[in-house]
Length: 112
Length: 116
Image (cartoon, rainbow over all chains, first blue to last red; front, side, top):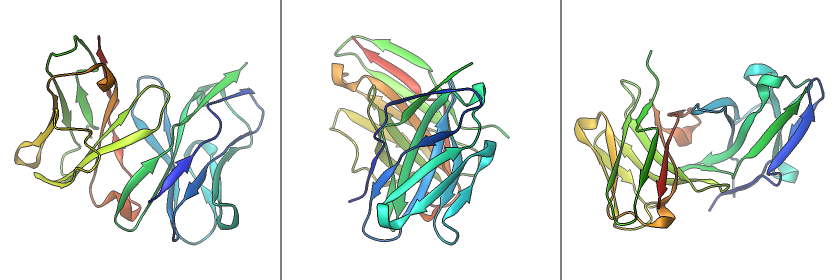
């Protein structure tokens, strides 16, 4: 079975600072990995995904994520956070015949 | 293009009552998923439709939950009778192909269900 761990429930950063949200997964083969974002009152929106090729993936809104097989990680990064990035971020893993499995989310708070 | 819409956005009911949630997927999307998030926890899979057929309902918690997808268009999720532990946010998502092949899911904004 596949699973996702997002160890940080809340992350607080200042506007303009860099950001890294952690995600660890468990899956027996090469996974499909996703990051979704949910802004208040909105549905989840796909930021980026990985399933093969370059392990550094670029997404929308200036986000990127790096797949590290040796660490079973897929951390999300952004070099400079904007106030509009305040939202909840979900990592998900899928693969084979499995439905994507989501983590519990990390809430990002941005201070001015 | 209209996105995935869910109705109602909020529902407050008493224990023992019945509630029906509705999801309208993006037109042309054969795949429809229901997920649930209990406060502060992970988003958990409930079931998956391909057109009008239930492809996977392994995540449905018990027989108080009934999902239908009439004619392969909109879907309803009925909880009868509702219990306190059913409270949470119910998300619907749709996709054109198969989500597990790396295609992205389009999510609705969810229905916040509170059972008192």
